[in-house]
Image 1 (cartoon, rainbow, N blue to C red):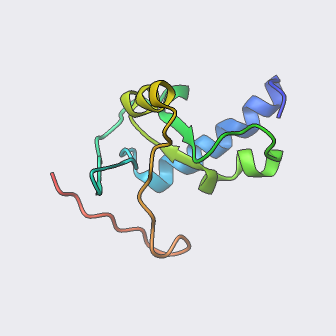
Image 2 (image 1 turned 120 degrees about the vertical axis):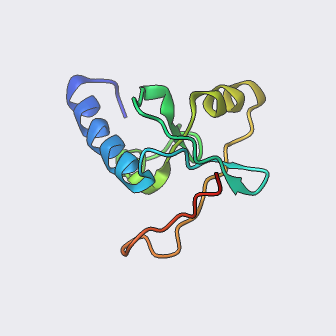
Length: 103
C-alpha cells in the first residue's frame, strides 16, 4: 500500500473501527492479561499490525482485524525486539464485546 492522502484517509477509517472495538483501551497481552490502559488521544503509533505489512494486500492492511490498538511503549518494544505484540482475542467479533477490567 503506497503512502498517499487517499490511502491515509482509508487507513484513518480502519483506525476508528479499531478504537471503537477496543473501547480506547490497549489490546496488548502482557503476561497473559490485557494491558487495558486507557488511551485518551490516539496517535499513529498506537496502531500495530499483527504481522509485517510487507507483501500484504491493501485489503489486509485496511482490515481492522489485522490491527491492534496498543500503548506506544508496546509498539516501541516491538520495534526494538522484533517480537510481535500479542493481542486479546474476542469471542464474538460480531456481537457484544465484553472485556473484563482487571484494574
